[in-house]
Image 1 (tube, rainbow over the protein chains, first blue to last red):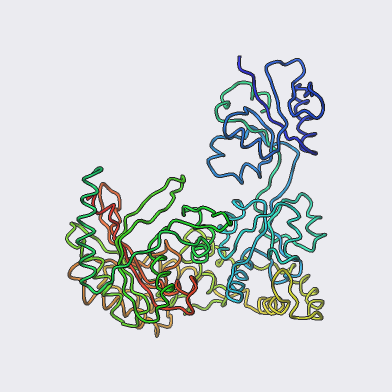
Image 2: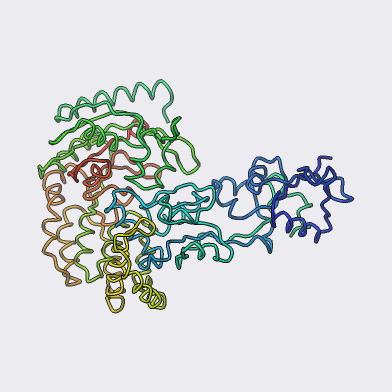
Length: 222
Length: 362
């Protein structure tokens, strides 16, 4: 019988909480090949083989069917093209890994309270500087969809790999859209979240690949 | 549905015949660039346009797209050739777009464009030229809209300036526009508590160098807009009644000969200032006078909202086939496009194209 392939996040709190969540389902993760090895097994269960991967990679592997089950962030799935949501199904939203993807502007942009303000400012900006306002983010697709749904069309996405909060103050962008759980990093960097600027409320989820969706094994996670 | 060689032969036959007609009408044939700098497309149509364009990055990271329509390519040609006067172009070529599923759709388009013309007959001239090759098609229907009339309506309404701008800017985007109307009804866009907190912060900003930049904007701009915003009327500006007028206007759908009367009675019904309407209706009145006998033409206030670059009159020639609308030709005025693409100023421009793929399948 073919083994069930499971992917778990390889780093940080998401890894620890994923392991704990599996434990609550009587699936004890053991690193048979050593702590630094990416592969793992489940105690007393030879039908499962697992691998620790980057959370984004887990979505990719569920999408192409090389993984059957995985834990990753909802934000990551939503950032991929829509076709991924056809191939990767959510079994359950989990009670950890909470974070919101939000639009944030410099604190002193007093005149910008909401997306409607941003829409007006973006037109004025384009008129004055003959270029579009830049939004730095790690989530270009989600940001584009959200901005357009709120009528903000005069913008350009700048891909950020990290320290996104610094972009408006280094001249790399005018505003940002980033993941935050408490808002304290944004605040510490003189940014404020726009009133109606929550793009997505995310948490960790347990996902299943489309081809594995009818397998009864997934019922233990429901 | 015709296939392979038969299709190719038909395309050749039609394109040759139609192009020769366009040339006879004083349109000059032009070869257009197949590739377009993606930045120019997004400057024109916004970031969302990338989704529909087949785009790749060159080795230096510059994004290039296969042309998604031929109007942009024509406008770029006008700019590249540093033209200053009226130019009349015609073309035949492919436009490449991705559909919702990411599949490539190739359109064969035969079109005409008139750029920088001050002649008041240009719209009529272009319309006649584009429609003539398809005029004999049975049950052909022409639908006309005019985005400029909507602008005139909004300007006459008793609304804060910010709302007028929003409604005009977002008219082409139906879903968002409906959302805007809902917000206008309730005037939901100001948070009084936040304004109070921000007014305190304003004192601090006032003391700073007004030319300093915060997130790319000068303090002067931020302060100016904030002060303007808090003074802008936010209550009792008849949001509900204005929305009723706009919604009612968007239901107008009449034969072209009734447009003038319908629009005037609409303005009278709501006691709106109609002094700019006569001028705004000039083109439609001219079309009605000159070609209404040749075609079945209807006017819809809600028509022409699909492309953001149209600014005035828009048209569509179509037939109904198996309960579906088959679009044979479409076009319109796009007076702001050239400046967006890098020309020194806005110039009047209009164009229209025949969809050859549909034509050969009739």
